[in-house]
Amino acid sequence: MAKYLVLLRGSGAPSTLSPQEMQKVIQKYMTWSDDLREAGRVLGAEKLRFGEGRVLRGNAGKMAVTDGPYAESKEIVGGFWLIEAGSYEEMLKILGTHPHLESPGSIEVREVEERPYMRA
Image: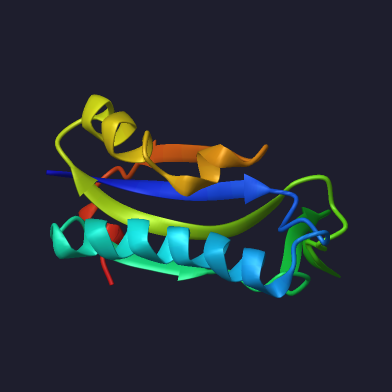
């Protein structure tokens, strides 16, 4: 089976949600992930912290580091999954039930290219 990296992009949770509504949203994501994990498809998954991180860029042969990305950005990466599936078509079927599709955010899916020299 192939491995696919799934990235969630969006502007973050709306600030208009009550704590109870926010908990319901979180529970949908957790249930979706737990169901996929129980099916033996999840190789890894994490939610990323808002407003933390660093961006590195090459600048005339030197590394330039800036803080970010910030939650104020139009679109941030909020989390990821590494999932096993037989094909892109199967991944689209799996992702078709993802709760992130209920928001204005997007889901990016990319097949991992196996390279023996990149294994940890």
